View 1 (tube, rainbow, N blue to C red):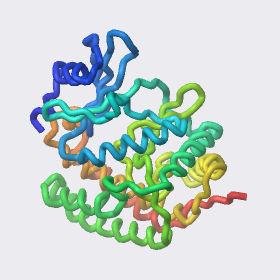
View 2: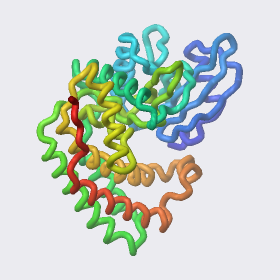
View 3: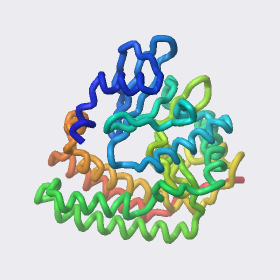
View 4: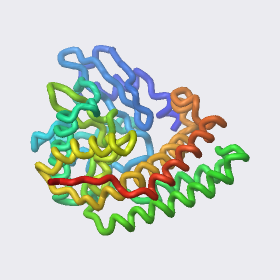
Length: 326
């Protein structure tokens, strides 16, 4: 981890030169923490994006499976950012580092108040799911409660991140939330799992040339279709219902949607909240994290976290969002 934390300009330039990219020395660090991502200028072409993978997170097989998925999507003319290949290879090694190179694509986040943009986004995700349903991932994880909640919860309880006055409330509340999440999954019944983007939120969608581009498939996984839709739904119930209709108007033009999966929206939001706190704690020994998230692990953070989780517990008791396809 020391070499990764201290990844420097010479390491980056030498790595790209090794696979045939003639760099001009310009490097811009981009907003990424799980991996190290840089825009790198080239002498004779447009800049590229170099992504250096965090050691130990994914196996080579898992990374290559993600690359293969995005390359297949790109071949089907879906607006995704797939890795650039050299001599048929997309994953490169240099010293202790593994990295991939991507084309640079500019854009802005979609406008969630714009029904037309949400409808286009729904179409794009449906087309992605049609391809994702053809075959399963074999080397990547499946979305599950243990990975997203139980493991990070246990880490936080063991490692002493929680203040003493917060600890009992966190322990009992998260246990209750995990029980409620299981209840939501039971209500949803049997659902089909497929290959997903996995982390489909505003930061991973670039609006360019009147179309969405999906970026950063690093969390691609197996799971229910709603996982790639729910992160665009927030706010009060009427607002979320309107946004849901916009998304599904586009989605169902290309793929059927199982309305029973709407039972999972607040459950998946709860899992993400628990996982996010645990993720920050697990990465706290990486110097980039205390600098980027100075508000984490403060008394105020944990008080707000408990309050937000209590709100989620109540939301999971409410009926799911309603969607009328007719």
